[in-house]
Structures are given as structure tokens and as C-alpha cells.
Length: 223
Image 1 (cartoon, rainbow, N blue to C red):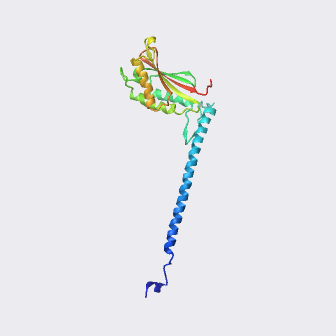
Image 2: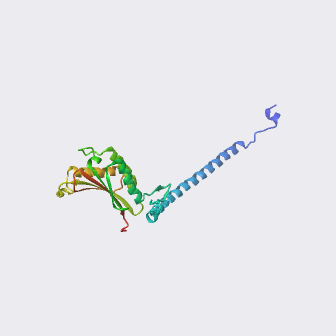
Image 3: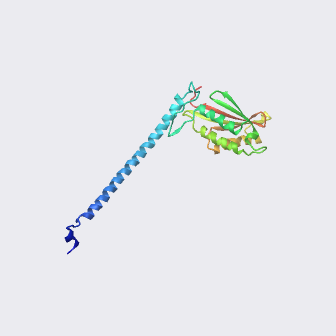
């Protein structure tokens, strides 16, 4: 007598086809879920770009100094943050007070322009055209702020080096002052500064002196 006769159990004839149908059903559900998540990612990417534009607009149009704290509020989200003009100029002070403690930082136009006067040896190794490592690190920190202005604004840096003879303040000059100015501008660019945000210049003055001028520029033509 067979085992089937003892137990009364017989394998359903359609068991194998049912198992195949179950696998097909799970595969179909998986494909539907995959398509759903792809659609969500596509929608969220467009929303992120729109949200970032709204965020920048809020910072440029409505940010103002708080009457009690004197600080400028900044609208931020997980999409990133915009650096306000006050934060940009505060960064100049923080970075260079640490990098060059003896530097003279002057507010030329409140909220718009600051000037840093230094001895060239604070930027370069003595009697060389080699930037000091601390200045490289300072430039890298400044570039992070230079790269995140509100919409319609630009943050700019001018590196100006003094020369003895005013007649030598020419684009064709090829002395050490010009090369040093170009090295500073190139270093900012190598750290990722936005195009047009850094310029190099020569000016009549102490050949051992240099100026870094940090400006907030309104590209919308506002005074």
C-alpha cells in the first residue's frame, strides 16, 4: 500500500502552476513599487530647484538686521544656505583675525566694503613668491562665502599690491608686485572662487604693503 493510501493526502495536480503565478504576482508588485519611487525622485528633484530659488529670493529681498541682536537672519533649509552680506563681511573679520592677527581691518562702507591692510610677508614667505600655507587655508574659507551670495548680488575680492613709481602701475608691468597680485588671484580661483569675483591690481604705495578689499556688489543696479 502506498503512503498516499495511508494518509489520505494527495498532492494537488495544479500546485506547480500556482507557485509560478505567485512569483509572477510578486514580481509585478515589485515593478509597480519601483516605478512609483522613480516618479517620486523625479518630482522631488524639480521641487528642490524651485525651493532653492525661493530660498535665495527670500534672503535677498527680506533679510534685515535684527533690532535686538544686530544679526542678519538667514533663511536656511536642507537644500543649502545663502550667505548674507553681513555674514560674508563677518567671515572676513573672523578668518583674517585668526590668519593674520596683526592685520588692520577697516570698514570702508558699512555693510558693503571692508579693507584688509597687511605686510606682504604676512601673505608670502619672506622675499619669495610662495604663499604661506595659512593664507591658502584662509582663501579656501573665504571662497565658501564668496560662492553663496543672495540672488542679484555678488561678493568680490581685490588684491592690490603697492609699487614705488606710479608710472609702473601698468598692465604690462612684470615686477614682483604684479606677480604676487596674480598669484593671490590665481590661488582664490584654484580654491573655487566664482569667475569674476577676484581681481588683482597694482597701485602707488609701499612696495612691502598689500591690500585685500572685500566688497558686496548689487547686480540689480540698486544704490
